[in-house]
Structures are given as C-alpha cells and as structure tokens.
Image (cartoon, rainbow over all chains, first blue to last red; front, side, top):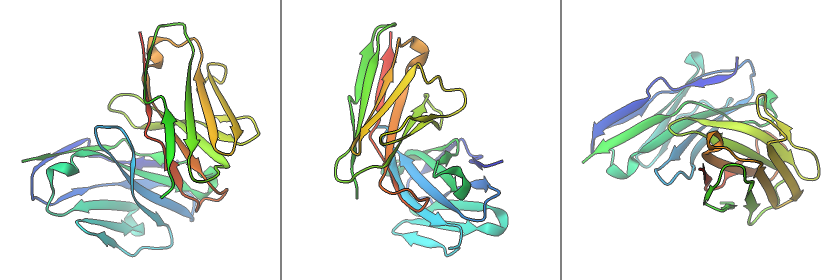
Length: 115
Length: 117
C-alpha cells in the first residue's frame, strides 16, 4: 500500500508552546518525495517543504523543523514557539516514484493555536 | 515561485447546470495539470491528471463524463462539472507541473469553491 497517516486529527495548544505534527508513510518505492503543506482557512495550499528519500538530514526553517526518519517511515513537523497565525490544517504528503508524480495526501491535522 | 491561478474562486449554481473551472499557470508552461477535490474537513483526493494535448487520466471512481477535463494549451486546463448536483459541492483545487519527472514541483492554485443548490 502507498499511503500517508496523520493520526492526530486535531491539536490545540496555547500560543508559544511547541507542537509536533506526526506523519507516517508507507511506500514500496525506494525513491520518493515527502511534503508538508499548510492550508489556512482561505483554502489555498501553502507549500512548506519537500524532501527526497535519499536525504535524511533534518531541516530547520525559522520556527519550523522537520525530522525525517526512514527507519520508522516518519516525517514529523515541529513548530517552535507557536503563534496564532500558525492555526491551519497541515497535510503531510507522499509522491512515490512509481506513482507518475501523483501526490498522496494524508488526512490532515487541524492545528489551533489559542492566544 | 511559480503561480497558478483558478477562476472563478467561488461559484454557486442551480442543480442541473454545468460549471466550468479554469486553471492557469501564469509564468511557466505546464505539461501536466492535476485536479483535486476536497470535501469539508477532509483531505485532497486526486480526480484526474491531464497532459497537454491528450486525454485526461481519471482516478478510479471518478466519472469522466461528469467531470470533463480539457488541457488545450500549456498554460490552461479546464474542469467542467456537467449537470451538477448538490453532492458535487466541494472545493476543487488544481495543480500544475512544468516538467515530466517526479522531482518537478507541483504548484497549487488557490481553489474554487463550488456550491450546487
């Protein structure tokens, strides 16, 4: 099976707390890409990161960081010092090499940051 | 980054009418465009893949006669929902890709919210 699982349906934290969004993927391909997208209430998808399967280096971009662990098939996303503007639905996604570039989305995690 | 537009952003129509949604790549040529549907509080589901100048490839369970896709140029793809019914109400999102390979980035449009009365 080729799929993405985001077990956390909704998360609510108080502003300035750190929060980690979990993502577990399944694919039989050895070459694939992983993504995170943010979808604010306006609906537009905002691209956050793309990672290929051969690059397990963790990445940090400002308050955002990503932990890619092939051994556990996970690609978790952490927001440090969360802000109200981070409130959105976050999707983890996968493109296996054999999928003809189709993106397989997880079910999404709705993140609410309370002031 | 590359920009993809969709028009209209929002449409309300009566049951039985047809609705056309346009997806344009504004600053690049898109050899491939994808159409997704997103029901409220759900994930994006791929409906079809269209390559310029050829017939679209539909995902399992998507009626090709109901969701007509035309990719007539390298910058424009259209999705026509024919004889729309209330169950077709959804958020439709397109994406466009410049290259053919897996490493080529897909750029998403802002989406079109369709409400069928």
